Amino acid sequence: NGSLWLDEYASYCDWKGVTCEDDMNHVVKVNLTNNGLSGRLSESIGNLTFMKELDLSDNDIKGSIPLELGKLSNLMYLR
Image 1 (cartoon, rainbow, N blue to C red):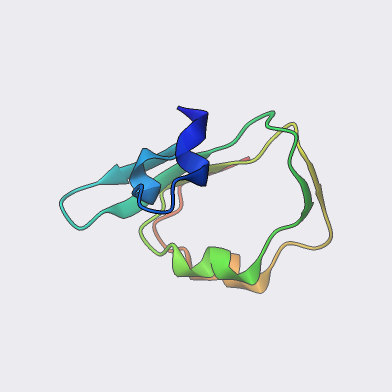
Image 2 (cartoon, rainbow, N blue to C red; image 1 turned 135 degrees about the horizontal axis):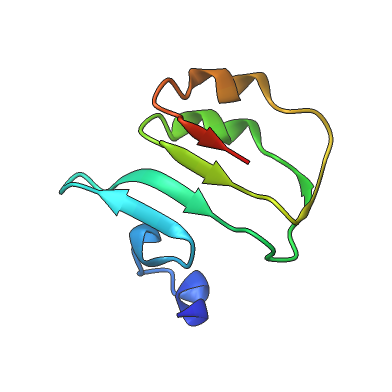
């Protein structure tokens, strides 16, 4: 449901393309393929330390890959 992006009380685990695991609401997968995204990838991506999969393909992401991506020791799939 796309309207959840705008609901300040909705859990990020309910956002389109975001998958959480366990009762702690750890983000383990972000799949935003072909969503018309543009701009740079934030250094804050490094805070998602439980993430296993990140797919931002077919968007217009620019700039360099943040070094903080290296903090994602559980990351097994990147596209």
